[in-house]
Structure formats: structure tokens, C-alpha cells
Length: 62
Image (cartoon, rainbow, N blue to C red; front, side):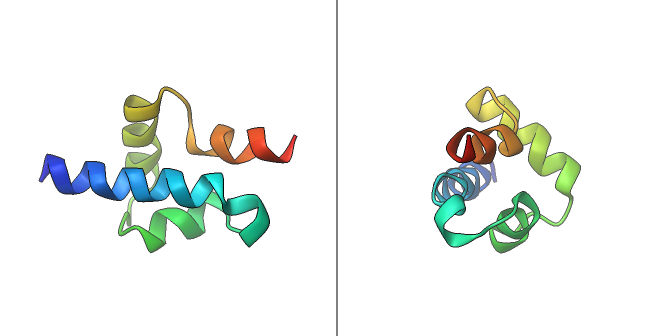
């Protein structure tokens, strides 16, 4: 299960990095990657990548 969660988190990061052009929100990405609990998604994402998903999306906008 850890492997699958990491695969989904990697996909989420890829989507967030391309999210500015695509118009994705963090919620859109989380749900598309199979995360139904947004707070758990944000926590797991931060643990894996060292930043919140919103920070990944925001760094590309700014």
C-alpha cells in the first residue's frame, strides 16, 4: 500500500507542476489521483516532498 500511495503522490506532484498551464487546483489533483481525504493528502504530500501541495502549485505561478 505504501508503494501505491507513493505512486499516486508522484502523479499528483507531476500534475501540480503542470497545473498552472492546465488550470488545476490542489483539490482537482488530489481527487484525480484517488485521494478522497484532502487533509491526509496534504500531510502525506508534505512528508514526501517537503512542501505543501499548494506551495508546489504557487511556486510556478509566482
